[in-house]
Length: 387
Image (cartoon, rainbow, N blue to C red; front, top):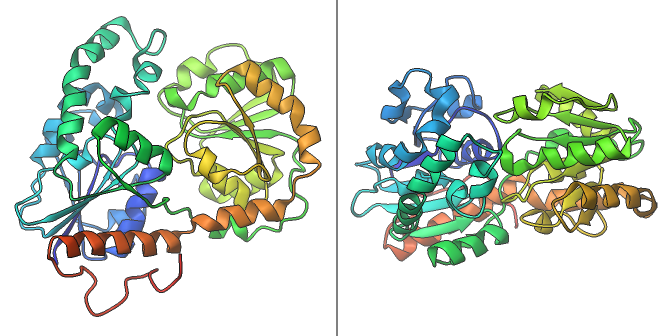
């Protein structure tokens, strides 16, 4: 069976790209299709594939300005030629699931989110203070058409798989369709190799992620500026200039982009990870828990499925005041925390479990269409282990 893997874009190596890397392991002969690709930006497993891009790849400077071309994304996705493929697996948080699949092919879409920019997170990206007036006006003008396209292109997909119950609920509300939940793969091995004892010795709280509007780093900066408690910030991105331009106290440190090899120690030495986003799923809370460290998180989104009352402290409102209250309550809560509980929670979301569960969903979708299994004669990697 010829398999095509379709991903929105390949310009950074974040959670979505880690899912694609796992899909490349599950389908070792599959080709990759994407709107645009910055060579060297993703894992060697993905880079080794035959990667086909859309017409957007030819736009000068596109890798740094691709968000400005959002109205063209549906046309770019539709232009990807996957004719001749019998199975199409899309990894989509924007437009990948809108690829035109040939007649008779099976389309399974792993959905990180419906087009988040155009639905419930619209104001996070295009609200006052988030974008210039011309960009806000343009976004509002194209929003109805992009929402209609997002709904329409969800209907032909044979099988929808959501990364969390939170996203499955959004799919039902926005697209009117049901989705099976398969949590994404989390690469836990490099974190679980650390000892559980002696964690938190750095005395700082840690915020880690992309400086994207919906991540709400601004909430953490405001809260910790008031608290006078050390906060170390790891990451960068589109909001970097706005978030780092003001005067911040010396106990808030920006570390920039930290090499992957240094992340386990940063997690382990932190008192807790601070998680301010309403995330589709959220991988960093699981990485922190794998290191035996707790999480202080906004009580919305996928974090409700990955952090328990024994492994983290949730705050109810996405505001600096609500977060500050949780940080003040943390020393008392911390007395009952057990690192082994955090690690056990993280291990429920291993890569092998993802491979097994997603392979079963693909086989089920093929069976319903009367097509043979894409894994003939042998168990695909990961499927021999129980979920």
